[in-house]
Length: 267
Ligand SMILES: Cc1cc2nc3c(=O)[nH]c(=O)nc-3n(C[C@H](O)[C@H](O)[C@H](O)COP(=O)(O)OP(=O)(O)OC[C@H]3O[C@@H](n4cnc5c(N)ncnc54)[C@H](O)[C@@H]3O)c2cc1C
Image (spheres, helix red, strand yellow):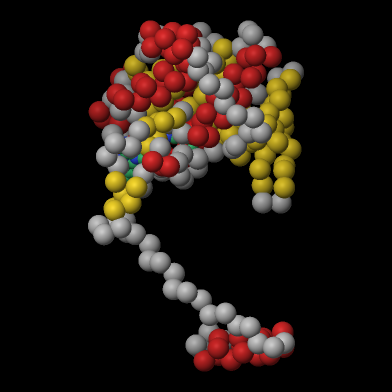
């Protein structure tokens, strides 16, 4: 079994403070961490390896040079190998371009490792961008089936079965491998690194893949390959306090509500 886990380094949002006068986030000194859902994805992959030691777990990220720290953390908690995609031409990639680059990275890593991936994990969404686009788009680029918001997975006989979060409860979904799975929160916690595994991760060589290494089509990557246009960014206005209707009886409350809505021209 060969597993790829896509991880993103994000700011630790619990440490972000807001300057309410200037209405901006204070990002200075905020540490970067591995996106939480990606830690669940990695833990799930490492548990599959615990059950079948022939499994290999590879992690990949696309980002600036400092994302190496996130990859080292992944190596310290069970990943066997890490790759970093880093190239100035990929700056300003939106989610579509990011998914394209990751699909090319998956193929390039398969070639280098001499084995195709049976399973590709992503987190269900990133704490900063928060779109949840990348996993499904990556599946489309690779032409693989996708399972989203999985909480637990089992793999057997070339098939995966996943319990997935939904508004109505839990959907049990199965698919043939290879497949892309986006992970939600798992019932188990990601493991911690030990001093020994941290030291080994620090010594590990992390290959860097450039746009040229991946043979990227420049029209699909970086700013030029990003159809998303940010039109405006703003701090949302606080909602005004509502009106509480508490008449003697339910009928009187409904009558008052109807009168208020009618006065406001809503009905
Ligand atoms: C116009 C524009 C310009 C941008 N410019 C930049 C930029 O210069 N630098 C920059 O860092 N970001 C940039 N971004 C943000 C970047 O495109 C997104 O962060 C990225 O595409 C992921 O989207 P998301 O955060 O919504 O992830 P989601 O889709 O919510 O992430 C889901 C999962 O996909 C995987 N994933 C997401 N991103 C990566 C990644 N980079 N590597 C590996 N796995 C990943 C993770 O498993 C993650 O849990 C830009 C966005 C826009 C719209």
